[in-house]
Length: 258
Image (tube, rainbow, N blue to C red; front, side):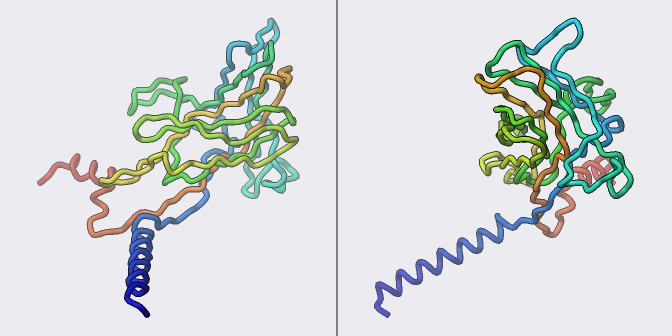
């Protein structure tokens, strides 16, 4: 092999070793699916789901839109149930949203969690918005959605550890029946920092349904079920890694140094 070719070969080999080393250090992952919300036990959860509409949401003497309720419905692709219960005997429900607007346009409905009781730790009061923690480093957010084949679309809002809110598109709602929608979390959204503990998980703020200007906005229905994340739960192990755990640190220091 000529010297020039040998030099090129060595440079390529060194680059491959560097990439491999970087991959094993920075990109080791352990992906798993975590269910955040089944919508089956709404009355027992520590938060409620509220809905809020934009300017032209319909209000009459008989009804104010949008409305929400837990209903006995579920995607048969997900649950093979004939009696309305899952394999553990729990009652299956979905979160139903009923909307209506006075005119067509870029209307929206927000669906977000609120606290059911006062939180002494944070100082938040019952009824205040609550952001659902998403464990690990979130790669994808998925949810089963029932649509009426209307030209609408769904977004999800997430907050990073810097306090920045990011808007991710879950997908269009121009389909009939149940469909699993998936929103990808881009790598540009920070979920870790240089110092330990490195992990800085995202929080789910809300969902937003948008109507498109030319689509009808007479009373319509959308249903949600089985909110989940595809999450990287890998954490590096090193001598003294327990001292990077916030709970351990709090316990050690609150216990009083001796």
